[in-house]
Image 1 (cartoon, rainbow, N blue to C red):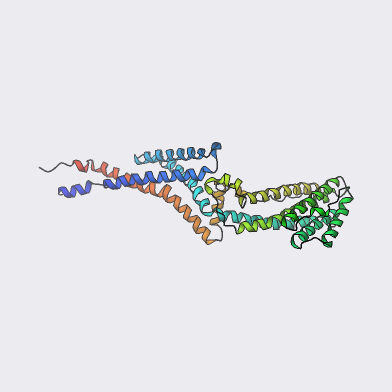
Image 2 (cartoon, rainbow, N blue to C red):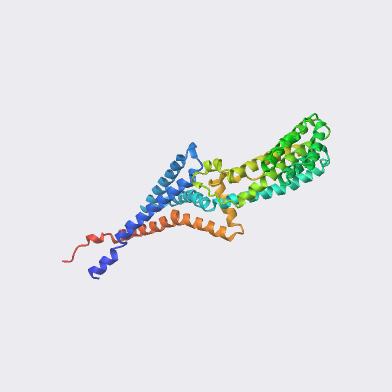
Length: 375
C-alpha cells in the first residue's frame, strides 16, 4: 500500500465537517432554547415571564450536558438526553402550534360555545315543562323577551309595548314591586333595548325572591334560571357569531395580557361561559333538591382561556390529528415535524458524525497529519 492510500484510509471525517457538525448541534440547541422560552413565556412561571427563561435555560443546560457526554462515548446518558429532548420539543411546539392556529382556535371556541348554548336551551325547556310553564314567572319571562324584541326590532313606542309592559307590571304588582314606567325607554336602539331588558330582569329576580317559601318555590327557581339563561343566550349569540368571522390578530407572545385586554374574542368567550356556568350551577342545585337521583349537567368548556399553555396545546393537537379537517391535520403535522427536526434529528445526526470521527481516529491509532514521511 502506498502512502497516499494509507493517508486516505486514516483521514476519517474532514475537519470542516466536524466543525459544521458542532455548529449545527449547538445551533439547534440555541433555536430550541429560544422557542422554548417563547412557548413558556405566557404561563408566567414564578410570577414572571422570566421564569420561562430560567426553565428554558435549565433545559438547555441539561440537554447540552447529556449530549456532551454522549459525544465522549458515555452511551448511558442516551436516555436522559432523550427525555430532555422530548421536554424541549413540548416547550417548542407550545410556541409553534398556537402561533399558527391561534385565530382558528378562538373561532372554534366561539362556535362550540354557541352550539352549547343552543343545546342547553333544550335541557332547560324540558325542565320547565315539569315546573309549570304557565306560571306567573314563566309569563314574566315571555313578556320580557317580547318587550325586548319590540323595542329593538320594531321601534316599539306604541300600544304593543304599553300593553306588554302593563301586563308585566300587573304581575309583579302582586308582590308589591313598583311598576316599570315607559320613561325608561329612551332612543329606540339596541342599547336601550338591552337596558330595558336588564331592568325587567331585575324585577323578575325580585319577584322570584319574594316567592321564596311558597309551594311553587322550586318551580319558580327553575323558571327564573331558565329566564337568566335565555337572556344570556340572546345577548351572546350575535357576539359569538361576530367572533367566528373576526379577523383580529392575536399577539400570542403575551397571552395573559392579550386575554385581559382583547374584548373582541377570548375575553368575551370566557365571560359568556363563566356566566352560563353560574346559571348551570344554580340549575343543578335546584334540580337536585326537587328530583331524587338527578344527574347534574356539565359546565361549559372554557379551555380557551389557557390558549398558549401546554395544558391547552397538547389536547388541542390530539383533537386536530383526529379531526376531519385536512388542512388542520397537515398544519399540525408540520409543527410536529419542525420541532422533531430541530430538537432531535439534527443533534442525533451530528452525534453519529462526531462519534464516527472519534471511532476512526481510535482505530487508526495515529493522527493522519503526523504520519511520517518515507525515507
